[in-house]
Amino acid sequence: KLPLDAALIKKDFPILQETVNGKPLIWLDNAATTQKPKLVIDRLSYFYEHENSNIHRAAHELAARATDAYEAAREKVRAFLNAASTNEIVFVRGATEAINLVAKSFGEQFINAGDEIIVSHLEHHANIVPWQQLAQKKGARLRVIPVDDDGQVILEEYVKLLNSRTKLVSFTQVSNALGTVTPAKQIVELAHQIGAKVLVDGAQSVSHMSVDVRYLNADFFVFSGHKVFGPTGIGVVYGKEDLLNQIQPWQGGGNMIKDVTFERTVYHPAPSRFEAGTGNIADAVGLGAAIDYVTGLGMNLIYQYEHQLLHYATQLLKDIPGLRLVGTAPDKASVLSFTLKGHTNDEVGQALNKEGIAVRTGHHCAQPILRRFGLESTVRPSLAFYNTCADIDTLVETLYRLQHKK
Ligand code: PMP
Image 1 (cartoon, rainbow, N blue to C red):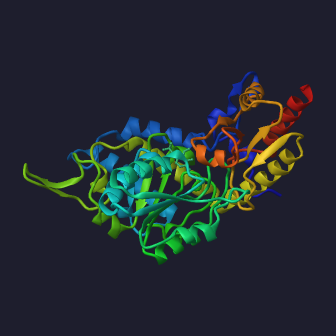
Image 2 (cartoon, rainbow, N blue to C red):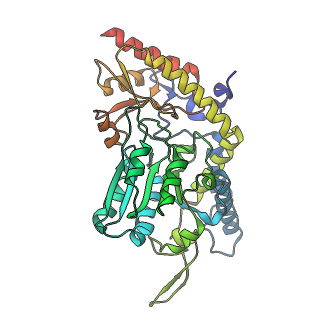
């Protein structure tokens, strides 16, 4: 018996009732973005119909409603990550902005010439480019943890990179291109032993496993709302409270200040100091609803179910003649990346689209890791808890048919 009834869960997602090319939509592009349950869509409408106002400013009723809804969402994020305080939860646009915030605030302040920043070979461009920019500006050095042939980081090589110049280690908990689950707790611990700070990119992890930032002990943890069944345009930086309050804000403006004269500005403590201007209020509230939804299903059940589904899919894909699976670490989540002999990845993507199956083909904004495997692109189905074994069967049948046509 499976831990979740995915066929029933699918009914909570209006878009999963769509047809594409006359076929029921099979959404296997969850690593790019996830679909939204009706409850999230309704929460957004409710906000605009009953609560819409700017927050923290006015004396009127709607400002109070909007502020309460926004701060309630912050509390939901806090509980979701098991952070110690809502002061540790900063709302931003998404994981990309979150990493840029840390690079432009913490990085500008604490990383200097000769210092070293470590990332892994698995990183999404969002966790490479901001560090590269910072390193170039400061004269710091970007170093890379290599991966083995299964696509897992090599811890012994990581240990060799750590030294007194290391100021920050920034790595992903789950690879968006291969699905590798990295040994995050160990990576954090080893960095802390030499006094470096750590950022964990949770963009691909929070929707597939329960995350406890206090257990992980990361200094920063970031994710995007749209990859965890919430709206686009909203994301989160978790940061340890002491650390956030030592960091100068990266943007200035309204909401983030205690007092302004032409001579100087006194900032609010975190999180306000990092939320200059009018934020994405409605979508933060929508993210809160998405968190209610996934925690209602149970992150542990989601993890178990997806694990079984991933195993099922992996076994079937492996048997397809000419299919090369890239990313074969024992510990994986959601992602199946492959190439099919005799077909370009675009051809495979188009053939799947004809059957109503949505996958991503391309470099998945992670060119270095694909090149590590001698590739410029792959076909990448990625699973969520609303995918069924029947979805996988349709995927596999379509791939077999494509092979036999040759
Ligand atoms: N990190 C990882 C691992 C990702 O998969 C993504 C999105 N593909 C990002 C960061 C960036 O997220 P966003 O585009 O939502 O800012």
